[in-house]
Length: 519
Image 1 (cartoon, rainbow, N blue to C red):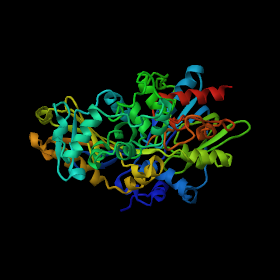
Image 2: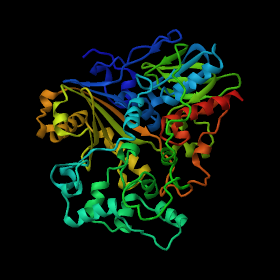
Image 3: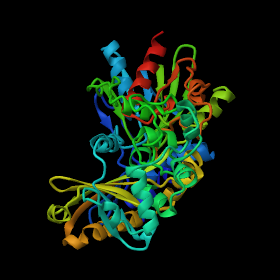
Image 4: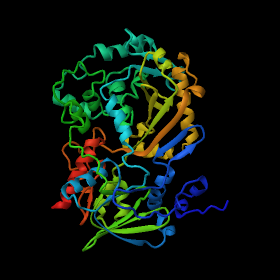
């Protein structure tokens, strides 16, 4: 009852310290290589933990957005520290920027600030995507949310379409898409066919062009969620063709090269070199990391820039010869209000897509062996994909985006719903879906689950220019070109500035920002 409530608590309207958070603690500047952190993971009884974009990690950025921060923040206090480079954002792009700066100048003083309590948190999600990129699901759970009952369809079984719980006409349509689709545009040239596909989502292609039974579209709907964090109602038909989705085999399009209308990620996947871009190694212990310390402003100056960050108690400031903002582009206008209006608008247009990644430690693998599948796509349940990783780990992905609204508006709507989703519901849906999938193989979630960790990323995948949502793609001009423009001593990195939601793109953006500041 007598615990001190810090200023951070006011920003979210909750008493974080009353929950045992050390948010009110003062951070003492450490020596180079020292990681200073305030824990912001959310723990529940029974081995359930939420990390990533928790309410504690987001409280200050949201307060800045809503105009509440400076009401309670107090007067900034200088630390007296001076750095050659200060990086806002400890993700892959920020850490790559720090490493590249130190590679060029080994004696430089570098500070990395981040609002989370760890660096590179989304790397776990990227690792899952890399591992499963070439491994398509070997099972589809046609779930009760979509079809009224749970039916596991094993895709390795001959005649698997006959097991899908849909109408007979829908089964015929599904087989046609996979086995013998016609040329839907027989009078069009190859270029015209690609232009036609670029104007459609994959759901529109299935329903309007192919004329399939609605059950077929519902069966296919979650196919892109693992890679794109939204479903076929937002996924472009041109990228579905480029990704090898069913229904395009009769078009006669060249399978030896991608279309110029394919998104950057699909083009790179096609060329089988995803991740081939230079990804800089993390900086060594010469860089100072200050975690749970969100940047609240970056101000250019004649002799040095000034960077302010919130340490859990008050705003502290440091001086910097150069600054790299490797955070979400949408937050940068609040950090640098002096930016030109057109650049601020371009930065705000980068709307990231929400995503959750759950890691579940199970007692053993017996139920998975009995089930006979390792990777399962769900057609409509909350967690849309799950994969077993031996010896005893299950990974699940959830994509809250309201895809029917499109990637941008759908991401914003899904993020609002995610913020309101209780942690208890996340835990319940994980246990419920694993019971539904593995229960027939003898799995009891009460006894079989030992621990659950959920990485909640309200701002996960960087937005990527793609058709049909960005008619200026691929010819430009692109908002990202304006958004990432250097502002004095301040350069902008992050995958939003590419904008491509891949690890190599984040690192490439970091290298570009370092090069800009070196000129």
